[in-house]
Structures are given as C-alpha cells and as structure tokens.
Picture 1 (spheres, rainbow, N blue to C red):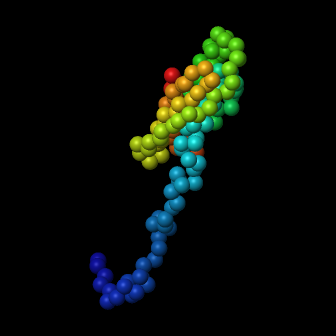
Picture 2: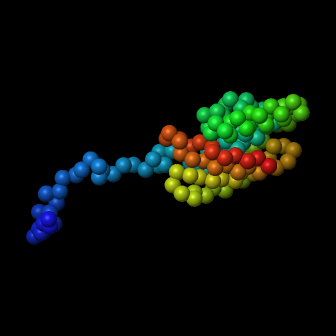
Length: 137
C-alpha cells in the first residue's frame, strides 16, 4: 500500500515514531579512550611482571584466561628475581580499530632497564573495555 502526499508537511503528520526506530547513542561514545585504557593495562601488566603491582588489581580489566596466564608468569618472575627496579612508563603507543567494539594497540614501555613491547587487544564487555589478548616481549 502506497500513500501519496501533496506536500512534505502532510506526509510528516502521519508518521508516528516507533520505539524500535529511535536513535540509540553509540555505546563506544561513553567509553574512555581505548588508547589510554590499553596504555594503562600494558603498564600495569609490566609492573605485575616486575613485582611492583599485584595481579589482583588487573582482574576486572583482563579476560579470565589472560588473568590466569599473567598470574602464573608473575609468580615465576617473583621467584626468580628481587624487586630492584623502578616502575616503568609509557614511551609510545599506536591504536587501530579493526571493527566496532574491538581495539588493538601496541605499547612501548620503558621499565628503567630496557624497553618492553606490549600488544593488547581490547574488546567491549558489559559496557567497558577488557583485554582479550596481551603479549609482553
């Protein structure tokens, strides 16, 4: 069934907005900058590996399998060496967004003895960014 209207105003009077067609704000617009989140997660993971931070502080920001692996690696590292270094700092980072709701970042961190490269993949999970992959070289 097709309706023909003589003018635009007459056509708009018969259109009733549907709740399903309402504009929904972009979920990513209210999230923090993924670059900042990736830098903080990478820096915190390096601090965990060097013994400056507890792995429990990263629990809500990491996927369960990443958390378990980081906790295991940090336990091995803590038994092999003493805490002698200062905490690291972010030197550089690059971010790309391969698809909506996913962010991949590379972060270079200087941990006072050498630079460390980190790769982080963030994905939206329950309205916030969460690391689904984390590699520290």
